[in-house]
Image (cartoon, rainbow, N blue to C red; front, top):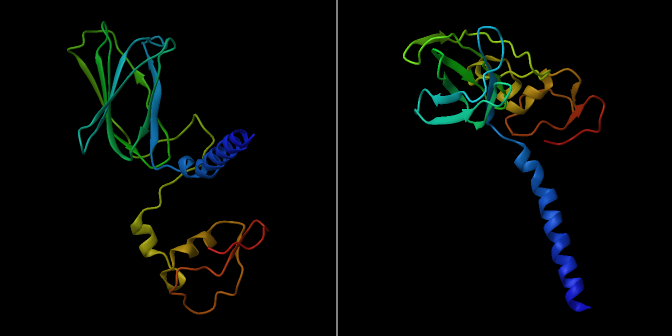
Length: 194
């Protein structure tokens, strides 16, 4: 009887630990690069080799397309990447300067032309890319933008007040040099101290 309750307690504490740690694992600064590799007629090419290379560190990640010509390279840190695709009977496809921001997935499709692997199709990524496969709205706020914003007291927590539906729990008169916001109410919810 004693061993059963001890084992039950250990199991419950382990389950509780996983529940408490799961939000910490869900937040990440990595993203994924995925896309379709297609022939000139638009059909997926299975078994194509995809190499994703970080342009700064030269670290490579490899993937192989599935039966529909789809590939995924997950847990990729932010930076600029080169995507190269090779398949026998097709020209090598290389697309450079693909910017990957934290937690913003990037879709990079490859249109392969018939030829030899010795021939290369080079594409340089454009500065503005539209994410069409998800409804997620994401944008990276860079430090230059934060520095140029007119924030009361330069408190970064006041950036939340720039979003629609966010209200301050206290009157924001005067400068605030501490790292508190006085509480925020988001879309009418109770005020949460930050």
